[in-house]
Image (tube, rainbow over all chains, first blue to last red; front, top):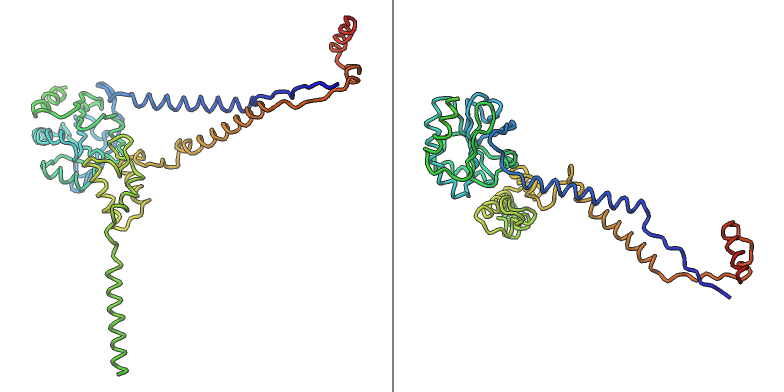
Length: 190
Length: 159
């Protein structure tokens, strides 16, 4: 007489289960960070802007230097305009920005800089020449500065006050030079 | 005659040397050459669009930039690094192997191996049970486990 017994069942080892759960949790954390980052809005008014450096295109200087750091502009109003040669709305505001720069340049209290966003130098120079832009411009290498501001597109213009805090953010092109004056003049009175 | 032959030979060598200099210039990169590199890059502006198929004017400018760099003798790696320096590492189709990017290369094969192992164990557990023969004499053998011995005694009493 014989009996049939079944071989004992063995599930997945505990160590394998632990590894799988740890890896899955790790992936969830990474995805959560990514989603959180993608849903972050632009920098908000009142935020302190981290220091950054913008190296200019050849031919552009500010106070004899070929680059500028935000930390060197303490006490001045900084206007940083993100643009690109392939951006049609950027062309709408280019004359207004240049005109405003020429109005404020002599005061020494306001600095205009342009950050060229994901562009080719040849096309960028053509754009600058087309609109006779004289304020310093440079490429946003590696999109580091635009990522810091978390821009959503171009054109976007940020006004940073004398204390390094964001005073105003213009999303989209300016309709006129008067709009730019309306933002800067109150800042200069502070 | 012999002198003429030597002069002819010298002239031919000079001509060939000049021709070689001309043909040594880098040929104009073809569209295939450009797209071979553009395929390894993403449009810096349009999301998830490879540079070789992106239809925008900006992408055409970037492809022209690739063509220009190729004609200057740049290698594919140099061009990709240039794009990464200019527009960020996100334009690379293949993430650079540094920092947290290593996870992209390590996690998928590790997960695959773990999955294969789990499947293997699952299939193993579903196999037909192995018959084990027991002899009647083995049932009557004294059971070391005290509890089982008492259960056997009670069963015998009831039978």
